[in-house]
Length: 234
Image (cartoon, rainbow, N blue to C red; front, side):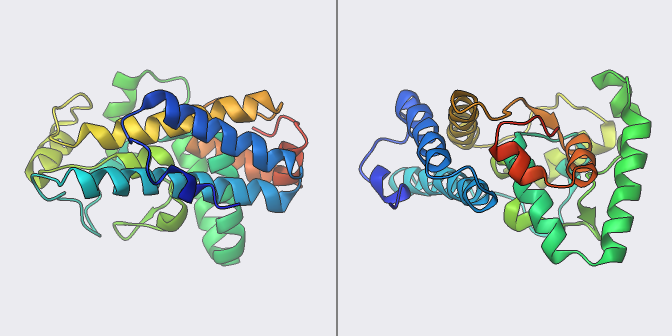
C-alpha cells in the first residue's frame, strides 16, 4: 500500500492528521512483520512521508525567500543531534552498507571523542567545546549520511548564511535564525506520531543522542532485528 499517496488531498497544517497518519504508518508496517526488512521499510517510508508533506505544503504556499543552505555549508552541523531509535537504525544500516572498514573505524573514533567531550555537560558547557564536537557524520564540510539524515536535520534550515555564521562564531546556541516554521512543525509532528506508533507496538521510541545511538548500534549483534521484536537496543 502506498501510504504517501493517501495524504495528497489533506491539509498539511492539520496537526492531528499528521500525527495520526504517522502513527498509523508505524503500526501498520510493524504489524506486517517484525523483521529487519519491515523496520527499515518503515524508517524509509516515514522520512519520505514527512518530506512529501513539506513539499505538498510548499507547492500550495510558495516560499517568499530562498533557503540559504547549500552543500558545504556546515554551521548547524556542530549541534548535538537527537533522533528516534528507528532513525538510528536506518543510519546504522546505511553506514554498514556504504562505509569502508576504515571509514567505520574513523567514525567510531569521532563517536568516542564526541562522547568524551560532552559526557555529563550542560548545554552551556557543550557550547564551549562546540568547535571540537562536530556531528560524527560531518566530513570535509559535508554530511556523509545525507540520504538518510534524521528528521531534525531535515527540518533545520536557514534563510541567511550570515546569521548562521555569526551564531556559530559567537557560540550562540539560542541565536535567532530566519527560517520557515512549517518545516519544523510538519516534521516534528510526523516524528512524534512515529514515536507514538512505535510505542503502541512495544518498540523502543525514546529520543536519543546521535553519537550514543551509533555506538549502541555497533555494539549490538543484531540491532534492527532486536528492536523489531521489542527489545531495548539503545
